[in-house]
Structures are given as structure tokens and as C-alpha cells.
Length: 479
Ligand code: NAP
Ligand code: MG
Image 1 (cartoon, rainbow, N blue to C red):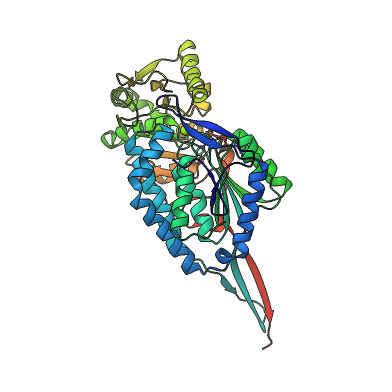
Image 2 (cartoon, rainbow, N blue to C red):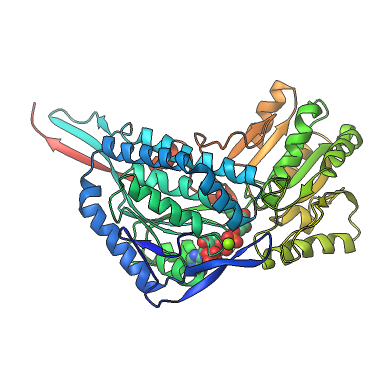
């Protein structure tokens, strides 16, 4: 475990020499100390990023940049097991999930590495005697503030496209999960990424995070996390002012019509909410079921849900613990409040025997029917809690699906082709899955929110537009 920050190609302590502890969520035990970076460290990191832009990194051809990213991808794959073990220790997630996360992380560097020399400008027809070139250029210094739920994946998603376009990045990992970020920084350096092109400032959100978001010399902010902090980030960005991409929360619906292939749908529906213990922005936390199939569908989902098991990373079951004590308390309160309010429990998962007493485990719960406007059906619980809501017809399903402040992703389960297309258009979301959900990491697929789920796009080639800008060069040369 690397216990130093990474600034300008060197592993360093915080300028104050202060640290804070990082816990293992499966045991509640301290696994190590992390430097508590602050404004002075962010200042240094931004200065190093600027120097990298002005130096070797800024001069590197797109081809060479792409090769560096591809080498980072290969190094990640070479160290995949070690990285997965580290990520599982730091997040508590099952090893299979952590292993998958590392594959997706490598895939981001591979995808954007191979795209680096394929993004090009345009020639725009204009008046006779003129040539107009539209150049595509990096923004400069990009800031990346990421959450703890998929630390490695989030770094790949946020940082890889920025580097591919030639930006120099300053990354602030979540305070609960710094270790994979530091490991990735070391791998990147070994793969030939010039010093200063990627800096990692560890620390607390209100210290290092706030200092980074409000730094006068950054040119862009990519933020993934809660709506509350997203508002702070956008406010900070407004003062500079710089562009920001916000990936915030969700309350994503799984919409099941009475002609759905339940055989295929049921395991996917359960996985969509229990994966990563429900701590997924795209968690399928609302199950909308057509009334005509309600009893059959609910009993089959409940049966599968009741088989969900919670354990430590090594046990490698369906769910791990929640990230920290505060998160556990928050999720358990939603569950307790719903029970106290008399919302029927349809199924519960179980805790494995012999779990460490200090781990932040909760039992997954499936509630239903839940009123569409109930707290449980409106708030992002960010835990393994599924709310089932009946609906009558397409119009009713759309009204319920769109009836939260969020709009991140959605799934529609039906064999009717016309309905698939109508629903895909009517549902408010950045991604709509038809007869599937969250397939294969989706590195290639543009992703992001509408409404309170945020704005801007990550993943896919569209992400490259977010982390670059254009310059229109108008040249008069005569006819
Ligand atoms: P969070 O508290 O918003 O934290 C996200 C990041 O922001 C962390 O690195 C955090 O640092 C930092 N931060 C906190 N306060 C800050 C401030 N004042 N200024 C600058 N940075 C600050 O979110 P979380 O609790 O980690 O994650 C849970 C939430 O994130 C959920 O609501 C979930 O929906 C959302 N999320 C969304 C997506 C998506 O793609 N749309 C993905 C994952 C999570 P510290 O860790 O030090 O506090
Ligand atoms: Mg930790």
C-alpha cells in the first residue's frame, strides 16, 4: 500500500505532514494512514500539471500519448490481481466485483489510448479566398474529484479521456479509498507518463477537494458524487469560471411489462440493486411492475432476492459491506423508517455466518408495494434496498419512471418492439437499456445524467469532447 501522495512524479507527504486513517469496511479496522492534503498540496499539484503541459507531456504527439495510455492499460492488466485485492480491501466489495472493476479500469485506458490519435479537427467551408480550420485542443489542467463506490473505475472513466486529449490531471480520490489511485499513479509513471501529467492529492473533501475545485488555475472539473457536493462544485466552478461535468445521483427504474421475459429479467433486476451493495449511482432501485403480472413477477424477484448473501471480500458473495459507518447508519435508517411506516417487506437477503463484528454490513431488503411518492421511492438510498411499484399501462409507467428529480438510467423489459422504442424515448435518462441492464462496463457508451442526475457526458467518444475545446483558425489567402 502506497501511503504518500503523488505530485510532480514524486511520492510525497502532505505539506502539513498530517495523515488520516483508512478503514477496511468489512472489519472496521484501520488498514493504513493517508496524507491529509490541503491547499498547499493542491497548489503544488496544479503547478506541476501546468509545468507538464508546458513540457514533455504538452509536446508529445497524439500517437505517443495514446501509446502511453495503452502501456498503462497493459500494466494494469499485468497487476490486475494485486490491484483487485487492494481495491477489495479498501472498499469491502466482493473479489469478483473488484476484479471486474480492474478489467474495466484497464479498458478505459485502452479505449481512450487507442482513440487519442483519432480525434481530429475539421475544415469549414467559408468565403472564397479563406481556409478555416477547426482545431481540437486540450483544455489544460483538469481536476477530477471521484467517489468511493468504484474508485478504480471512476479514475479510468474520468482521467483516461482527459490524458488522451493531452490535458494534465489533478485527481482527488475519496477519503475512504485512496489506495488504488496511488497505485495507478505509480503504474502510469512506470508506463512512461511524464511527471506532472497525473497528480494525486489525497485528503478530505472539504479541504483538498474544495481547494482543488476552487483553484484559479484549473481549466475543467469532472465530479462524480452526491448532489449536495455537486452543487458546491458547480458553485466553485462558477467563480473561476470553468466548465464542469457533474455525475450525480439516480433513482433508476426497472420497468417490467406483462410480456417481459422474466427468465432473463429476474436475475438482472436483483443484480442491478444488490451489486456493490446498492452503492451504485445507476442502481436499479425502483422496480416498476405492470399490474397484470405483478404477483408473478414480484414472487419470482422476491425468491431470487431472498437468496442474496452478504459477506466479506474473500467470501465473494453477492454483496459486501457498506463503505463506512455513516453510510451504514443512513441506509439502516431508511430501512427502519419504512418498516415503521408499515411498508410491506417482500424479501430479505441474509448475512453470512461469522462476519466480523466491526464490519458495516446491512441486510438487503425488498419492499412493496411502495407508493411512487414515498421517501423510499424518491430518495437515493445508496444501499441494497429495492422498492417495488405497480403500474397500469405505458403512460402510467412513464409518469412514475419520470416522477423523481433524477434521470440517470432506466431499463425497459418487454418483447413488444414498438413499446421498446416508445418507452426509450419517453423515459428521462442518459441511458436506457432494453431487456438488459448495465452490461459489460459500458466503456464505449456515452453516459451521464439529465435533470438532478447531473450534466455532461463521460464514457465513449463523447467524453473526449468534454475534456477538449475547439479553436477556429480563419486564414485569408486570396483566390
Ligand atoms: P460525495 O460526498 O459527494 O463525495 C464525492 C467526492 O467529493 C469525494 O472525493 C469527496 O471527498 C469529495 N468532496 C466532498 N466534499 C467536498 C467539497 N466540499 N468540495 C470538493 N470535494 C468534496 O459522495 P460520496 O458520498 O462519496 O458518494 C455517494 C454519492 O455519490 C451518491 O449520492 C451517488 O449517487 C453519487 N455517485 C454518483 C455517480 C455517478 O456516476 N453519477 C457515481 C458514484 C456515486 P471525501 O471522500 O473526502 O468526502
Ligand atoms: Mg478505506
